[in-house]
Length: 523
DNA sequence: AAGATCGTCTTCCATATGGG
DNA sequence: CCCATATGGAAGACGATCTT
Image 1 (cartoon, rainbow, N blue to C red):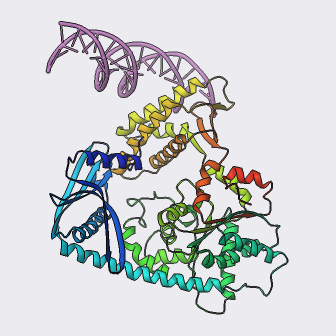
Image 2 (image 1 turned 135 degrees about the vertical axis):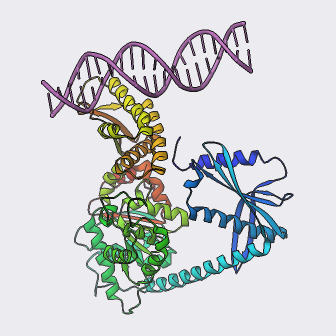
Image 3 (image 1 turned 90 degrees about the vertical axis):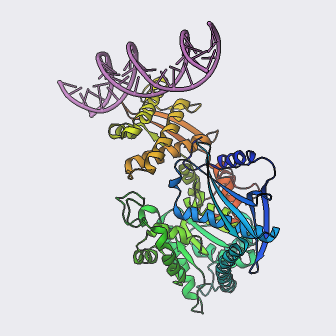
């Protein structure tokens, strides 16, 4: 199965391939631990050969090695050198041979980058790293303490609760603290936004939660949540407001160059993004306030970087993130990725949750369009001709197989293997082509569409339908239509520490629980 | 080990055909 | 009616397997 970067399985297979050809006398997955500047460090080195005094770290890749970016390689090297420092200390070595092995999973080829280093220089390097890290970690720790103090004593912005609002707040608070999953139906006009956000924030210190995600289905609801935070802030006695709040807007809304491809060669805000990011990030982190769309756009403009990706970055460092539901529930959702990566305890609030079924279905449905392929086929560059042709042929044969009756859509029991095979080859060619040619919006769209289709085709099952439709010559389409998003959403709910789904209409509860994949004991 | 054979898949070209 | 799409055939490339 082709993916542009090696998949996890390929990576593991690659590691094993290399480890198996190292012969005797080496240790794989060598455990390293140590203490540096009061920090406990641990890691697993891929290969260590004590007799040769050689430590190896394997990185799998695909295609030309030059495609791996400079900063990526620097990171690999830094990791190896940190392992080296730990190893020297652990085994009392004076020097060490360090080898970074780049393994091409496609061509089964190793490219080693070897250097020798002394224990002393490695350890000094590690100390520098650790002192940087420690300063940052202490500052984050400090921020968290301040934040928790603020949240524990958070004051409600109105003199009194509305009727039943107190009861709502108590329910929400308890749900957070006991790490529950709650479906909450509350009538309109109760002040749901504040009525849920306030107790959920207050519960964070008691529940030991790291982050709060407030997810909405519409932009107006997102705005309401931002307003609620602003209201809370103005109601506090102290001027100090150590609660980093971030508004995530869609790429389309944030983009400053919608006509250009989102690519370093095409968009001026993308070129050298990572060079200018640190300064922009520092400014955003220091501006003690709410990072709404407007504020972020201004900071981004000051540093000539893309506001959308600056917001993505700030999602790592914000206590409260307010954004669309797809930021957590989508296939490659940013917030879900962050939860897993950092093992965050996240408090998840979903506003207007009755929409989540439909939105979830949409997130796990995809449409493949024949017309797009045919349009591109005409102007496609030579190296892509054959792959695109083959896909076009696969379309024809699919149409032939399905010609039972035209016009009316037809549901397929199984996915068309021939078309999938052709797509796979085409995706592979497209990725290679786009990697070393100037960006092309049309080709990129074709690639995204195909990749998305194949991804969902991979997990095709009872929860989805495959629908073939032909609106005329050259205008066929194939849709994977998800009906039961539960199978995809379940893990998202499980990864969250506490979940609160609320809306004015959430009955019958069992219907939502089962369609969304909520745990059995959710209320 | 080189060559022969066969089947499958591409590629290229010519031609039929349906939709606007 | 015209053009883009659809399709079939021929030639060639490629790989697997069998034969000498």
